[in-house]
Length: 115
View 1 (cartoon, rainbow, N blue to C red):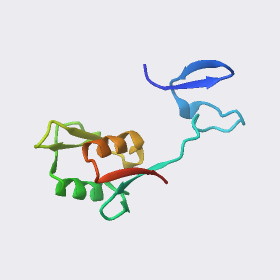
View 2 (view 1 turned 90 degrees about the horizontal axis):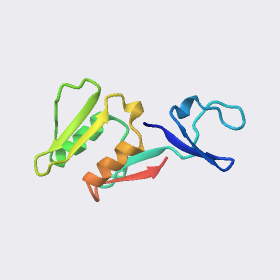
View 3 (view 1 turned 90 degrees about the vertical axis):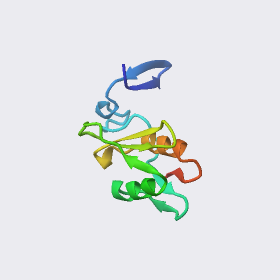
View 4 (view 1 turned 180 degrees about the vertical axis):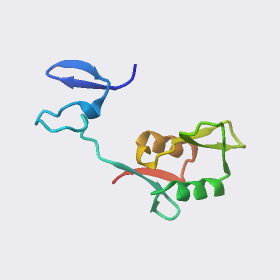
């Protein structure tokens, strides 16, 4: 079961497709009012805005592309650990969940900030 839990009028309910839900003012949109996030490469304070840039940085940190045959994923493996970073092939689907995964596996190198 996946989705987003929403609390409204004293009741929790699971919304399986939050993009399809209608906001209280009648507009289509997201249920949460969270701000967009960006991944920042701390040594240069650059925002990661493409997989080409991210792959360049990860490669310099010892990560290598990992090919498992899944055409919908970019994956990176670090030989000095058992960690694996899996990212959606479509950069427009690169969200804060993936960003925080990168931050946790590369402490003091990346940071997630509000856009």
